[in-house]
Image (cartoon, rainbow, N blue to C red; front, side, top):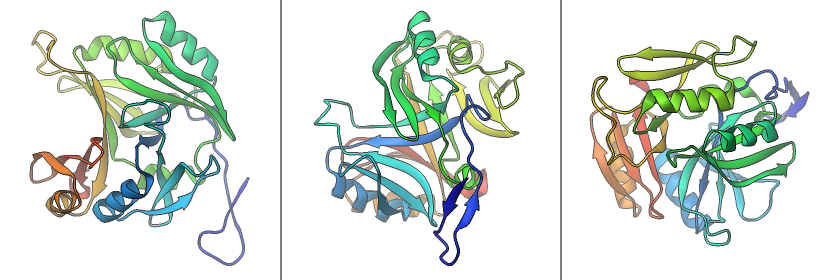
Length: 269
């Protein structure tokens, strides 16, 4: 059990959930950046996040929303020659097995598995080049709170949703019928991933009967729930970011470093 003292007073014991009991679902999101302070300032203004240090060192921070850890920042883009981007991490029982499955199915391994106590992580890409991570070990403290405060969901934009669903299903153990696994459904031309009844990811590739679009650069898009989409868009522009697309309930934004993310109205969840 973990001790959670965010509310003050006596330590509150929270149940430790590991990737052995919940797997295949997104369990964390992380941003690689170049300038840690500038990144913190931008997301504090746009999303109202606060920050705390991380055990991994001075180049890492944890974002808090109402006291709940929701995302990580790693200011290692220049140091490790990595792209500036938001990346979803999926829970797996065994990181080595998952990495082997990725390679066997035409994907690639960029980093890891590496030890990051209390777990292990790897950065990978599917066979169409979309980047994602895997995590083996204890999930973020107070898992249910993270599920509520974290991104509304993650969405894979790819050339062939059906082919991508097969790839990720085989790598992450979707629809295996095992306790804790994710279920896969097809709704309105999209692949929909559910964990414990909640929609946690979608995969789309355009119209149902259309041929795969060769112009699509496959990527995972992170969606954050906000109360005021237009307000976030204006704040992003004011603090050096840009608006790529804006609708009433959703906007695609780019931070000053170039990382894309989506803000989605809480009312549309």
